Image 1 (cartoon, helix red, strand yellow):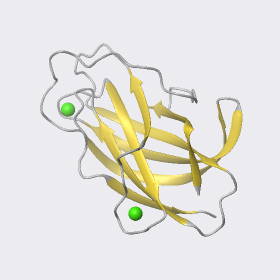
Image 2 (cartoon, helix red, strand yellow; image 1 turned 30 degrees about the vertical axis):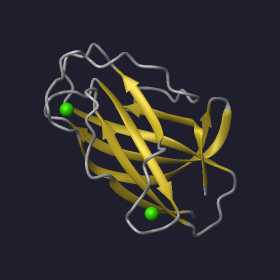
Image 3 (cartoon, helix red, strand yellow; image 1 turned 90 degrees about the vertical axis):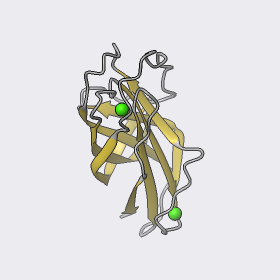
Amino acid sequence: MKLSPSARCLGFLALVACSGGTPEDTDPPPPTPCGATPPTVANAVIVDNGPMDFGGQVWPSLRITFDAADADGALTAYRILVGFDDDIDQIVDLTDPIVAENDFGPHDCSISEAELFIDIAVNGEPESGIVTEFALVLEDSDGQQSDPPVILQITTP
Ligand SMILES: [Ca+2]
Ligand SMILES: [Ca+2]
């Protein structure tokens, strides 16, 4: 399975439309961190999301949804980092991840829970029955990351 790192988008409470292309730069994090609590990821699932329009081009897509929480409220901006491979061993290299980010400033440490998703374009014709393993990490506006990565698998239909 080939995934296109250049065609991705994300949503926040299902309100933000897919923008495709490269995410825009976000404001620097607030000078004063919200706290020392890393964000957490719960109830993560990955599903076949059917054909989707990524910036004018339609690709098969996958969607990862999850519940994000951060006790110190630092989800006013966040980054979602996703890695993948075909070796099903609960280990995924995240040194060069697909990244989706969003910024809902002002950074007033006011968002401690959010239902997030990331849509990932599948580039090309994936073979049936191929298992792909994904790793998901959430980074809050202070740059703190959920740990350990959440590992997910999906089989192409
Ligand atoms: Ca935090
Ligand atoms: Ca692996």
